[in-house]
Image (cartoon, rainbow, N blue to C red; front, top):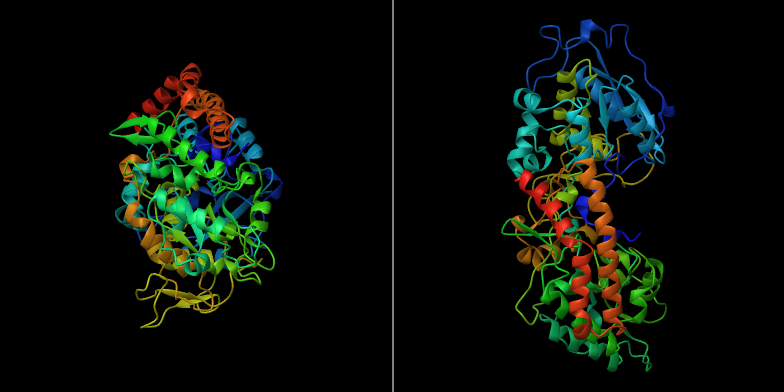
Length: 559
């Protein structure tokens, strides 16, 4: 199964009885101990005054235990003894009793727990509960609606809703209830996944400007092929390549948006109507352009078959560079970040190219960074008010920093006046140690956080590590001005389990056909003009209309 062939919505919805993004076994057990009264009626929210007012600390007067189920994190030694866990308890008076599920088998075990009728933990955390699951288990009463808790206790939550207005709409089910809270981690450059990168030293050597249209891009690739830009006297240059196995490396991902708006989901909204791009005449013109690149030797034939490792071998070819351009999220898909060659720093982004019909758009996905379904309070929570207050506290900026990076003054610190961030503005914070190692000072992105781009980009810019600055600048200057309107983007949708299963079946058939036509059109195995009508009819015969109808019903309910 090729990841690029499946829409974001279906990735969330198709397996409606599975928990996406994690897996587990209940065998992790409880790793902490509680005080004698913890979890008893005396510490439940049913007692008057058990939970403090919104925003006040500690959250409960007496020590209170919450049982939280989550999956293991390979970068966290022990959640029970973790420094951030201790910090939470000191600040809130809430002791966490952990139920840790092994990462590789957690989803199956959680599904069994949800279906068993057994007593549930107070909170299910970082388990990627899909919109379909939220609707199903919410309607069954297993997940507690959070609307009233947001209204009464949501100090930091309401700030998040104000700063990111689309979040509340996204996480609200069609019945009006919020059953799960997100963990926004807004990587700015990652919201623009369909990019093209080109080798700037070749542009400079051949005195070529950055291409701005599809025709100019063709001419640049032709120069790369014929004018020996690497200077070794051999015709070994590969003007343009990619890989069908990567989520962001398929050759059409960038270029097709010069002909018709074509996000990787292949699902769009036009004036409230759900559509797909791959049955439109503009898609046909895009196929003809891609075939032209292939037929004229400007596209690597292996781009239709090679894997990511083979693509990276092209980018890191020893001795001399041979790869002119590639469509990927970032240069690390086809070169080695911080590798000896340093070649990753020599590729620059190509702005959206204007096609022959004037189309010039960048697909933009703000929903993929929300990490929806990150925090669920179950029907068996003994103190749902305290459970929500804990969530709300973790949305606080300093708490998010401690959760994600560690101890203030040890792993990170506040920026000094005059220190500039990645975005060129006054910085907010700076790392003091490297991130990504096994440690026990923070949760390493497990649990709810609120990390908007305004915080991520406010990290002190480090000239010795230019990657984040480079990715931000290239994205901000070249892609953000052309981003698709929010109303063109199909958000995560709530579907019944029956509709999710039907969509998954239809999409598998449809996308297999689309990809078959894509490859055969590019390599010349079919005549695009001659076979186009029969291709469109085959999509109709595969019940494209029903596929769109199901999405339309869910979209209308959402809106």
